[in-house]
Amino acid sequence: MRTLILCIDRDNDLGFKAGVRSPVIGRADNINAAVALASKDPEDSDLNTIFGGVRVYDTLSAEGGEVEIVSLAGDRDVGVKSDMKIAEQLDRLLLEQKFDRAILVSDGAEDESLLPIVQSRIKVDSVSRIVVKQAENLESTYYIIKQAFNDPKISHTFFVPIGLALIIYAISAFVGYTQGALIAITAAIGMYLLFRGFGLDDAVDSFKNSMKESLYGGKISFVTYTAAIILAVIATLQGTSEFWMRYNEEVWHGYLILFMFFINASIWWYVAAGLAINIGKIIDLRLEKKSIGRSWSYIFFIFASGLLFWGGSTFILSTSGFMQTPFGEQFLLAVVGGAVAISILGAWISSRARETFEPPI
Image (tube, rainbow, N blue to C red; front, side, top):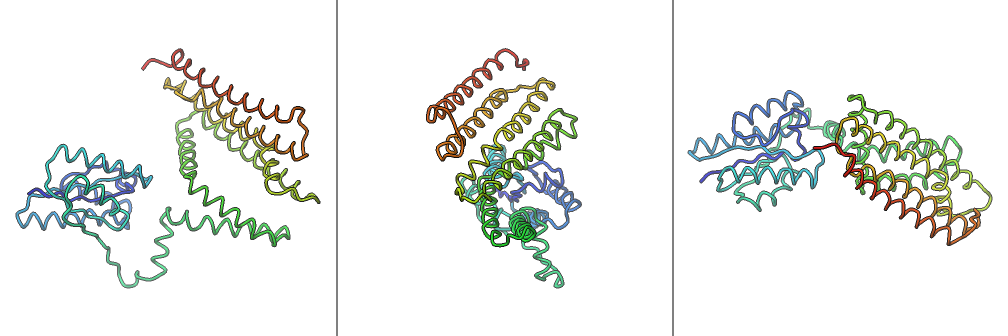
């Protein structure tokens, strides 16, 4: 019976840190991959996983078994994306080579969460978890906490809410309004949790990576990205200024009305920021003679979304007596109809542009 020794690197430390592409097949290649990873990050537990797999390989080989060792790496975006990548590599491997059973080698529960995926494709006879032994002086609470905080996944989740709370409290104390600190801290942490829960942190990471690529590549989009950041800051300041001015009025308006004031004062600045980003992308794609795809329609969709937010906030403020609009409900219907028409126009122009202006492939 032929046995597959499978080492899992779910977050692709092999590729990200050591530049090793997976799958890594064979004893020699796996040792070389582990050494390459060790030279970049000697504390990474994935290199111990590979050496643990090599140990299992040597043990079974010495007993006369027919074995092969393979390391599969996922993606830095741990979750569905990384698991699908590992599953695709495993499927290709099993199509190319015949194995009767597998032994899964991992460094902890995160990698072992892939066990059902592996079991759905091949019989798993054993799971070997590699636990690194530390010297006694390193087995301290301080060392464990320090290592955990050095992990970006943990530090970003743990430090950011605490940092937000401390900054908000400090600002509240500075302006002499400590009684509102608890409300502000609760709201900020709640927004942060929603931000993480909806995966918006991935969008921020993508924007940051795009900024780096455009800077290093000398692209027009770097200028438009910078302009977008400035416009977004202006939008936030405009909205916050309006919010704070209305908040300090003698009559309490309620949080919904205050939020509508924020949107009404800032939305077109945010729209301008979104348009700047998209226009920069379109210019870069045209200069590189690449397919623009749906980028044309995004310009119209961004404008239509801004129109909806502006129209909705204006209507709510007018019905509450804070603004005057000449036609009431007719104004809102006109705004919605205009936004829909702009979106349809954007989709039509996008399809026409692909037919007429796209460079040949």
